[in-house]
Amino acid sequence: MRRFPQSEVNMQGIHIVATGRALPKKVVTNHDLSKIMDTSHEWIVERTGISQRYFCQDETCATLAIEAAEIAVKEAVKKENLQLEDIGVVIVATSSGEYVLPSTACLVQKALGIPAQTIAFDIGAACS
Image (cartoon, rainbow, N blue to C red; front, side, top):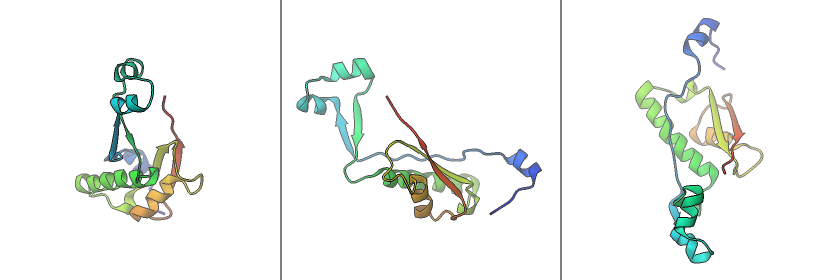
């Protein structure tokens, strides 16, 4: 594990150098929903502001997190010359991980080849 002198930790701190995102391929619109349930596009938008959402068919929380992390790491390498060994923590915010253990963050860590001694954990997330 890499140890920093206290002065370097204070100067360097923790910061985000890049982000990535991934979405399922299947888009489900309000119009699609109105065909299978008693609702309308207008009713949904008025109450939620949502006009479409994404539906996982082949994707999982982990595969989407891995795809997003790969994008973020690629960008961080380009911008900051980051190496996988430089990553101090892997955090995944989700309410839909495949397993209780291992966490989705651990699956991302392994898939990307981030060193095993790097901290990895999930944070419970929820939406309306």
